[in-house]
Amino acid sequence: MKRVVVYNSKTGFSEKYGKWIAEELACKAVSYKEITQQRLKENDVIIYGAGIMAGKISGWEKVKKMPELNGKKLILYAVGGMPMKAEEAILTVKDNNLTKEEQKEIPFFYLEGGINFEKMGFIPRIMLKTMYKVMKKKKEKTQQDMEMISLFEKSSDNSSKENIKPLIICAKQI
Ligand SMILES: Cc1cc2nc3c(=O)[nH]c(=O)nc-3n(C[C@H](O)[C@H](O)[C@H](O)COP(=O)(O)O)c2cc1C
Image: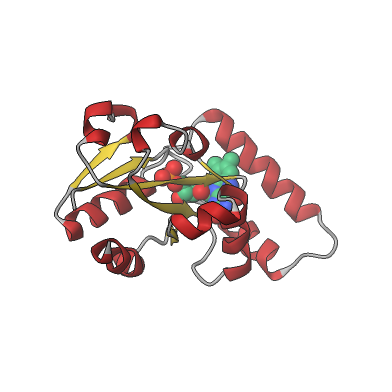
């Protein structure tokens, strides 16, 4: 089975995970911006990964409709700021991005990244600041709100190579 990792990364976390995954699977990791039809056609397994923006996995809606992916096996990884233990929120991301039918076909993995204000564009930074203010104003904050508030305060990197283990096992079984 020929595999390729395609990452769509705004601030570097999905790229870092993509390169770790490719290293473990001895395959190539390519940026979404550089992907060619030929590259997709010559691989049997496409591992797509991108950052989460307000619950949505960047670029995924477009990628999953690509005709070149017909008949290919897909694996999806989503990189976000929330901790690996935020099981409920991770399930929400899965449901937001994959229909129940797609969930049967496409293995989904959440990988904790971090926040990098320095590499972030102007608009995402404003969006994040707005989300932060809305959460801070909430009278009854959940544990998850509290975690996101402290996460959105400053840059952090919680990525870890350990997190890719389940994805690697899954990819090797295909
Ligand atoms: C506007 C904005 C919205 C975000 N929304 C979420 C979110 O809903 N859930 C989450 O876990 N992380 C969220 N994040 C954090 C990013 O997913 C996180 O920084 C991720 O590591 C980015 O990956 P990348 O560097 O590969 O693009 C958000 C970040 C920004 C800038």
